[in-house]
Image (cartoon, rainbow, N blue to C red; front, side):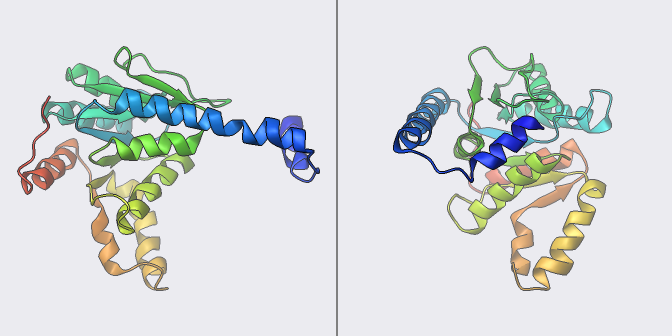
Length: 235
């Protein structure tokens, strides 16, 4: 708590030019370095699907097994899998990809709790980031679709980042699949009954994602989506 108080109070303190130059200006180079490494390491990984979800999901939870099955079946359709590289749903995604002998990538983030590399990431396919926004760019830039499992604030952030970029046509209309109808029901009701009713989004925006319950439904959606374009992963 002392550290948190310090961070808050520091924002109200005037800074000298030397502090700005040292703490802010030089951070640009760290940010650039993360982008450069990410682009160089991920540019040749081929078609992949990002799997988002909670770091807190335990291996004995049904959602963990479901995420593992989704990842496994994606690899059987030729896709690689990208996760946040940590425990929980992320571990399940990498584990399923590993079991399916497909590409298993982990984009880790340095956090004071929860996050650590899981053992199912392919050698040389684990990247560590300090900045959330750089990491999110990598998820979006090198994914041909998104599977969103139940999760917390981080998962919601990743979900709405992808939806917003597609809605605003900043990226292609890649498939987004939310897994777990019961889990997502309350959010979907709020979107329909509040966001649409208030005119903050259009009803057509509901078509930017699909909600399913099973791994088979999730992967079938990806396969049918790319079949329309006569595209197949080439692993």
